[in-house]
Image (cartoon, rainbow, N blue to C red):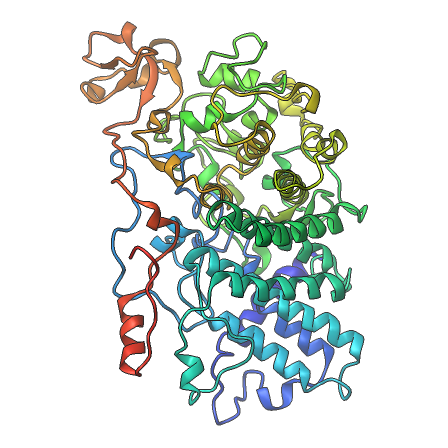
Length: 615
């Protein structure tokens, strides 16, 4: 199955890379639109052309767009040396694409700061073309039940793309059919409101849940459970955006209710459960038997499908954007409490060794247990490689642990995200006169995650599972934002611990209207590493080359600079070299501007394309 799946991902992209444009002369080497739409198998093949765009996992080779660790490091969780990367400050000359392939060796700026696509409707067109072509097959080549499934597939991908576009740009033009070149009024129509668009997406997603098959013969083909996982993600995003950004309680409830419904489709299926240790979710060579993984992307060097994400977790490759003190402090202690409330011994000692010993097991599974110079903050993330891979430091590495020849499978949708989407949506609904969250709800979500098994390495280190979260003894974190209820604060904490370097953090703080977390001056822990005693923990940095460069910050705020003679005083929170805050920003950065070229193109045709507010 593994090898077959990878071939699927690869070949279909070749077959339909240019499906936006059809030549007048039939091709002898590619599929022909005029005689292609004659069987269900051809529908399946066409649908597979969407997979690497939406289910890209660790991406491939050295490409990094939408890949964890390499494509998602712009948030309040990560810090670099020098000046922090900033938001864009003006509308770009151009921000658009008309092709279906969007990947690069380095993530494009809009992907980093918006975690989504550019102004591109090629994938929307592909979905609409898919729907129109299968409409012509009904009754002749496919039955009604076959049509219901495949139209669900097409509508799912259309909803997926619009959900991403809306998360980046807000208002976007909505299309539910293929537009001809001569239909200028539609081609150049202005943006529809995001609520109009997301109501259309909502309708698509309801149709998907009602009509998509629970299986298409292979567990890794798109099915109702896979789709439901993504629907829970997108509806949670839009529901909370409507609540916090637009103050639209009616729409917030509508979308959050669907997030709960979609999550429940997965949770009630009996197909998925928490039987895997955390590290194995990301470093495994074969996720096909992992009961927590709903969808994964398989890799196999034998057919040339590999990636590079594991190599950037191998302790040798540098991590210029690295975990900071603010992220580390968010991790629960194993008694289930934030460190300021914890009774765990040494809970308030914020060096790497003590944090590994006292925190939720995900801390040990995510980070190396000693300072590493390869990290800008000395806290190195080794989450996306198996335990054997880090043992090969400093090399030479087996191909699966180095360069772009990595072969560990990538989890794309997993049960942990679904249950956290579910519990957050329920908690948000409870604040809007909905049903209160119960202990049973917490046990089915957060506490199910806390009960994950530990692997042998963690057990040998003495790592302990985290205690359950209970409503009767809900922590009231002294660092909690005053406008966030304690339960929702703890749910948000779970997401932060669970998804380090994955797709969620920037989008989370945007939908919660918390982009101010990115202000390092207001949140100074964001510009620091963990506590360190250089003389005992990392004496190799007490060298002449670090004189006047190496700095620590004491608990009282005093900054000490290494002089070459004050080694004993180099104890405190690491100050990354030459660190400074990013440029000031305003709320306009929640959404991306459209390129000036695109606005001019509309004007040239006699139409108006409205710029994003604030830009």
